[in-house]
Each structure stands twice: as structure tokens, then as C-alpha cells.
Image 1: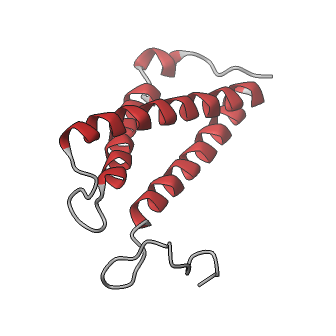
Image 2: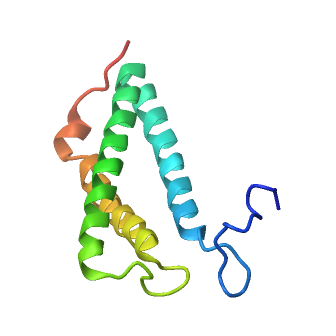
Length: 121
């Protein structure tokens, strides 16, 4: 354990483990998704579209996080449902589920997309 994580201000659960596991996993999922979307868009349509997709995902993430935090502030206390599921963790989980549904329908190919020829450069 590093000196940055073991200070007296680090959050611990009753068992001594860190309580920030869920936000860490959610951020890792977003990093992997951004890398995958950038790579896919870059290979298909060029680097400009790759960066545009990354900026779009960042915009959706930050706006969605503030909206989900606002909504959960109305219905939950700061402590949330337990040690691992405080209000911030729940807002990130809520955001990730909403983003997964949104990106599923956003990236879904239609039959018209399959018939179009790919762009060659």
C-alpha cells in the first residue's frame, strides 16, 4: 500500500478495505470504452472521427454524471445503501447503466448501414 492510500483520511470500510472500489471499476470501464470507440472510429473513418467520438463520450459522461447525482440526491441520503453503495457510487452505477443502454442503441447498425459501401481513403 502506498503512502498516498494509507493516510488517516483514506476511507475504509469496517473490514479495513477501501470503499472506493465501485467508482474505480466504473472509471476503468469508461477508459476501456473510450479506447475501443476511438480505435474503431479511427480505423473506419479517420482520426478526426476518433477524437470526435472521445469528446462526445466525455460530454455524455460529465453531463450524465451531474444529472444522475442530482436525481439520486433527491431520493437517497449520502450514506446510501451501505458501505460500498454510497450515493456517489450509486450515481456512477446509474450513469453507467444509462450510458450502456444509450450507446447500445446509438451504435446499433441498421439494415441501411450494412448495405452502404465502406469509405476508402
